[in-house]
Amino acid sequence: MVFKFLQQASPSPTSFSVAQARANLRWRIWAIVYLSVFLLIMLLAYLGKLPPELTQNDKFGHLFLYGMATFLGHRLFNYRSMRLRGRSLPLFPVLFSLFTTVEEVCQGLSPNRSLDWLDLIASFVGIAIGYGLATWFKPRERPGA
Image (cartoon, rainbow, N blue to C red; front, side, top):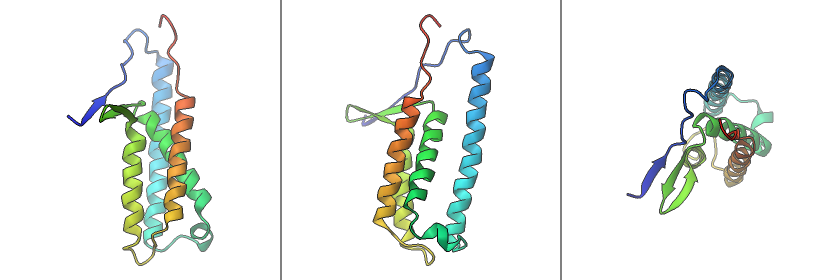
């Protein structure tokens, strides 16, 4: 089989504290809030309702929006990875990169948006930065826990 999904080992019931459960809940809430803002920005862009200041020279916006989405999404997916042709790939960043590519190409079909390869590159750089930061700040397992 080409794809084989790997799940992170779930912690044993004794090592999963109330503090960890609260922290996980906070990350989920942040991810839901951020997803709502992200989708609202996309909707307003497709409707042509974003202010021109946000739509011209928006490369930093792509870096930030896609980087933060990847940071939160990778955490929300619990750092899961998948195997593709013998290589382990991070699940959320790969899926989000595919979504990003399709969404950017679809912009070429919209009367209010345009396909911009530099936007796509900025989005991919943001995804890479978000993945790097999520990996950097990944909680480390304590020995003996």
